[in-house]
Length: 260
Image (cartoon, rainbow, N blue to C red):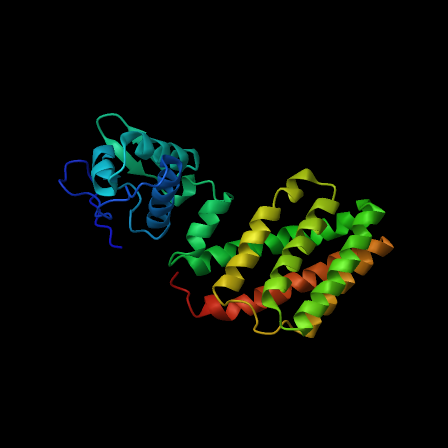
């Protein structure tokens, strides 16, 4: 799919989009597809910052109703990705205005040429937050959560040894979600969707080690054990080890893609 965009409202052809999405799909699904196509195009830079297009053009090119287009624009505007101005049109906003914590924006950025930059930002954020979350969990985690973490660490080890990436991903997401939740900090807990997106993105795009390293598996056990023992320093150190391994695994990728 190719998008041709001008930077002003006077063009006769601002956006080159698929001729029609009107295939009998319910309007709610059509709206979601328009949101997805536009979100991807914006994150990929195909619809450049400050470029402008008209609602009428989207209606014609997508073959959908004005209400579908307006709802899609409303959703993207709520994410800070664009703004609609009377007598001007719909203008794409710079990434500095976007809600970069929104899971959809994270998915779109991971699917775009900006994938490496997005992974770097997310990994740096995780490195800052998750060791502290593990430290707090060792102080605040209910016994049931600590026991569940130990069980998850054991299942992670088994999935890693069995080379079962699908099971490993599900367990890894749940492990890190539970550490964040067990910190007792509601702001940390809300980052679980962000962590899930980065782990899923790394897996889907082949950016995880083919076989989980035994050291990484052991570090998950160490985090769970330290939390269960109520040892905040050990929990912090073990989680920092997990983050550093992830950072090192990714560094060779983004060092080779420094232009992104």
